[in-house]
Structure formats: structure tokens, C-alpha cells
Image 1: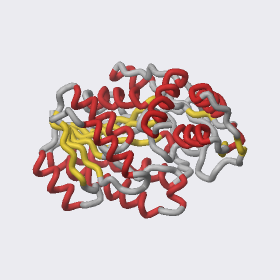
Image 2: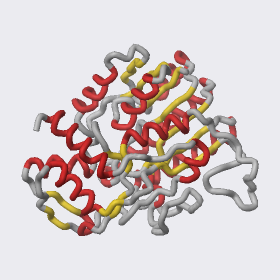
Image 3: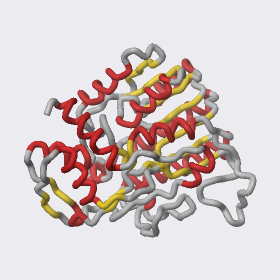
Image 4: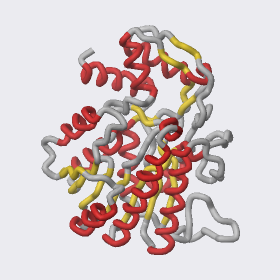
Length: 335
């Protein structure tokens, strides 16, 4: 198949593009290589595509309506994996328009490209942040998501609604995946595993929010990438049991599906830091802070629907994943 991967220079996008190419698909990777975090790391990720003649990189922006229309018209993609986004929960408090531009307008351009370009299936990234003020664990796609706590979460909820409208109006098969705290080699510098590891190795104190009482369903990037491929290979279809009188939250009479994709093994933050300490051989100096605005105390993914429909299940534990991440970090930064 010819597959578009948006955000191909990103953490998850790079790993996904590599796996698609390794199995023989033709991959077109789109990225704008912006400076939200170090573009040098993004270009280094693109260097991983060397040796894969079936990956082509296009430097462009999903916000560019005309450029996106031209790309879809020229390439006629079979399927699309949409991972480009303005990420980060707290960045939205200072740069709200970046979220509207990329996560709303950009996603609309992807939907329009799929609609007019005849794509067979669109898989896109949603987020565990959509659960917002909900504290009922584990998080299930059967639960309502009416109380987002950040603008980022609100835009991801909007993506799910926008996707449903296109599935309903144009019968475009669309699958949304709610990612849960992805980590691993080549990860994002603005995320806790990266920040903690860098500071612990440098002998600097780390800030630990909510006084360390957080728990996260950390999910290794390899597991996320295999889950994306599993979902991509099973185009969304109408749910024959869906009824408007009692509407299910994660399916529809349109070809639209929502799934959680996570490790289903919540790890207390202090245990996660302990795993980094063990992998680095260094003790962390911790400065305890209050919870930050827009944050949530815990996440925990209920993933049985994705397992039932695709056979996918996360297999990498934090005890396995953190040493791999730390080893990559030390090699990449020569520490």
C-alpha cells in the first residue's frame, strides 16, 4: 500500500514509518520540522530511514490547505496515519493558537485530503488527556469525556467529533487511538522520561509534581507502533449493534471507531523515577511541587476492545523499557 504518515520526524511517526517500510509498504512521510523542540533530533530521526528506498520525506505543513490538497491529489494514498499535532498540555496556556492551527485546521485538511483523495482508511492520534476530570479507573472508551482539563485535550476531543462527522457524511473509515504516555528511545525532550534522565545524569535536581503522587500508564513506543499498524490493517466499519436510542461512545452506525492504546499497567511516578535511577546508576535529587494546571493524577488504559478487534496487546514493561531508553539516551548524547 501507499501510506501517508504525518509527523514522520516525530517520536511515534518515525517508528511507525519504519515499521510500515520494513513490511514493504510505500511510505510518504510528511513533517514541517518545526522548533517546538530541537529540530536536530527530528532530523536525526529522519536519518534512521537511510536504507529504506520505499520511504520518501516531504517537508510541509498540514496547516497549508493548498499544499495538502495538492499532496493528496498527486499521491492518491491508500491509507493515512495522522500523527502530526501540536503536542504538550502546558504549552497551550501560552500558545493557544498553535493548537487551533495544527490540531483543528490541520486535521480538517487531512480529513478533506482523505475524502477527496479516496483513502481507504484514516488512523489518527487522539490522547488519554481527553478523559480530563474523570477519575474512574481504568479509563474506558465507554465513558463520557465531557470535561477536558487542557486546550490540548479539547482539540483532541474535537478531532474525534470531526472524524465522526466525516465518517457519517462521506463514509470515510476512520479510527482514533487514544495514546497513553508514550516513552522510549528517540523520545520527546519535553516529556518526563527525557527530562528526568537528562537531569539525573547531569547531577541536577528534578521537579516532581503532585508531590510524586502521580501514576501513569507508560506505554513503550514499539508497542504503540505495532498497535497503529494493527488498527490500520483493520479499517473501521459500522457497528451493526449501534442504536441511536442508547448510543455507544466508541462505535457508530458510521465507519468510525475509538480505542485506547496503552500498557494497561499504571506505574507510580516515584517507581518510574526509581527505574531511571537503577538504569543510570545515579540517585535523583527531587524537588516536590504541587500539581500543575491541566494535569491529572493518574491514567490507566482499558484496552480489551483493541485486543478483541485486532489481537494487539502491549508487551513491554517499564522494567524492560526504561533501560533501553537510558541506553539510547547515553549513546545519542554521548554521556
